[in-house]
Amino acid sequence: MRKLSGEKLVLASHNAGKLREIAALVAPYGFSVVSAGDLGLPEPEETEDSFAGNARIKAHAAAKGAGIVALSDDSGLEVDALGGAPGVYTADWAETGQGRDFTMAMEKLWTKLEAIDAPEPRTARFVCTLCLAWPDGHDELFRGEVSGRIVWPMQGAHGFGFDPVFLPDGESQTFGEMDPARKHAMSHRAAAFAQLVAGCLER
Image (cartoon, rainbow, N blue to C red; front, side):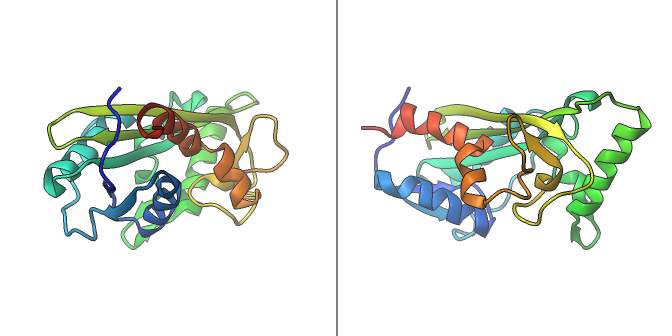
């Protein structure tokens, strides 16, 4: 596995919240992070049907555009009773003409589960795939996931996306109810990032 060298990474994202989160994660290892958005790089079209495929598209586009190592993240929710949907289309389920509406998306999810009378527990997982890509075309992939089940009604105002309907295994609070620091410590992104650190950052 290739180790990271240098002091700067480009995050293949235009999301300011994600930039803050990733910057805090890599800072202890001596890296600073700039976003693809800050560099004026365009957002590539995500045309793959897997988290790994879309993570690779984003990371390679940013690495090529910036000329330095890029880190991308593709993540979403997989619900077993729906054959893994929404999966890579998790954000698409929330799209409206006026931006994303995750309350609508959660209602859509529950309606679909009710329509097929999905048995309880309605098992699901959040998945995160991180891709580190170098300008020479090399990449490394890391997948993290956290298992749980879908609950109703929505619970909690923390987090984002489908967090208020996701109850992690062994927990009594949804990601939407949980203290953000506790959620981040056990999240799918944390699991993927731990693998990245062990493989590419620890010197």
